Image 1: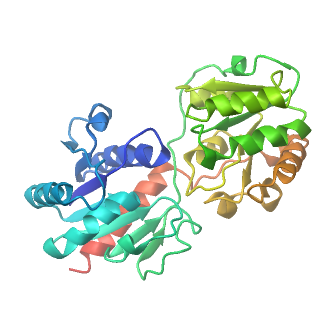
Image 2: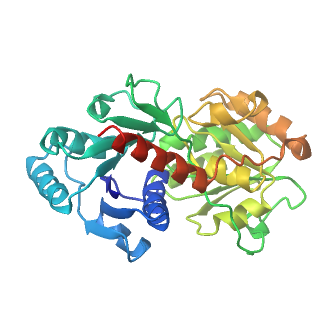
Length: 330
């Protein structure tokens, strides 16, 4: 079974993490895998994954980019093509009629208003029911994101919370961009008696720094910047919080639960399908978020749990099942 994964975005988000891990996992399961993606991902792949470095950052309807992609896909002779994200789906969709022997699947990683690009694919994998809310397609398959259990021995990164040593340690992770709702989280924190560390970098950093200062919370909120020790941060955290306005199936949710760190989240993506109601609040409501965090911190031992279905092996099993289902329709 020769699988071609196509990634048209680039960066350090959950979508990109998923595709790189999926390529490695499918190879480990004995499948032939090639990955069409930005050159930046080549160093992250096992040697046996056929990497086809291709810059697809041009406009998704750019004729030369589509022609280059078509020639590449026809040359590698795939059994299944698997597009990841709406941009990859947009670029692959018009090519599918000219690749009649190739079965097609696309993954919808977050909720989109425009989902027309997924219509031609035989199967669509959604990382949450919310992600698929606007998609009417007979071949939708739900596969929540999963991560491999952390087996490292790194010491907990308690030093990420340098002040208020006796207060609970709360962690948030994400790019410092508006969709993550960190401004909402800073405002909510005025009514939370705990210390907050936010790991991530982005263009909203200066704005968040000003907001922290304006609300007088320099003593209990710290912006950590980009961190490469997420497992160590999670080992030290008492609670994890997601304040996003919009998500699909956030990896950070899964990672936190597998480290037995309770999670409070806004009503985004898979969080609604996984977390108990007391740990969910409406998006955009700082008061409700503060209330949920405070209540969770008061009952930490009762809320620690791990969800075994949110494993990467489960993701592999389910994805391969979709592939086998497609090939059985020959």
